[in-house]
Amino acid sequence: MLTINYNNEEKVLTLTFTGRIDTLAVGKLSEIMAAEPALKDLKPEDKIVFDLGEVDYIASSFIRICVNQAKQVGSGRFSITNSQPFIKKTFKISGLDEILNVT
Image (tube, rainbow, N blue to C red; front, top):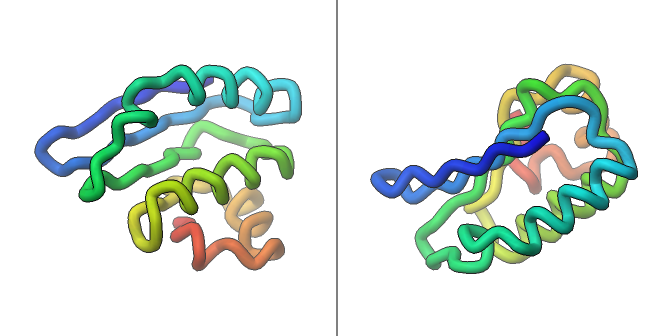
């Protein structure tokens, strides 16, 4: 469901998600992320990357998590990578693809 890695050299915290991120999964992810020390102890130079390469569905509540994380770290320090075309289109339709740096 979620793997968290921090690259100290590049100052990048990568959260790799897998499977369906439906409403039920978002609740569990929210709990895991709230308890994750790496997310609490971010430094001003740190970046966050959400890797969605193994995700085939996202609920709208996951988009809220993305927006909240982007707000926490500030402009240009949050991105979403490896999105499947359907998921990328979801962010585009919502108008968040550029704001969240979705690729």
